Image: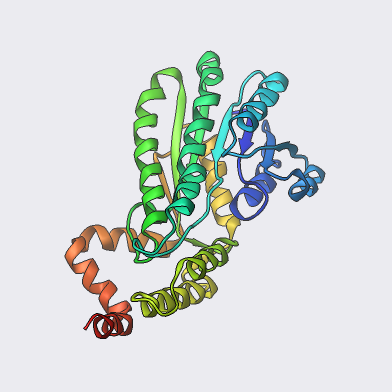
Length: 286
């Protein structure tokens, strides 16, 4: 059983839901973190301890881990949740914004892991739960850079799970599908900011924007963040946690379908999904 659990990105969505759920789990001391502590101050009333943490800032990360270690001896469980979606076509997206996304989604996760592992190894136990995405197993157009960050999380988690097993540290990857948080709004906003309204990808961008909105509103395709929080609790407390947890039935179907279809057939499926955008792009080129 883990003791001190540190959650990154707890100001909203999955991180907030996880903090609320885990404070009710016997034996756990929950540290909810965010860049601005005022955004999570209300979680103190639920029993969570509040810390400032910016996963793109070395000093902030060190201070948060040291604060937990000073109080509890070691971070017993790390939930690497902080992340967001920077959307845009490969050609049009700002690489400065892409680098910023990787700093949060990949390098922040990696550095937090590096910082907690010495304490976990010394204790001879620990849990690391990385929040990936079904987007680390398949790719949709206009989300290539976001998907790349989540594919990186897949690789890091697989390597880490093997490397730290001899020290009693168990690692799991949670792969949510569409979760009703602010993620969809952020993705749509970054897409709007990166896209040229009169450019060659205008129709595709508009189609993807509409699909994002429709999908996140659908109760059949999406789920509330509490569904992911429940799985995070399982990964932290199970005696034999899984290597991967896929969250939402729709995500399980999509991942399985992508694996069975292969790239060529899946591309054909995407062309059907964005048929109008594809024709518009051809006319623009010619």
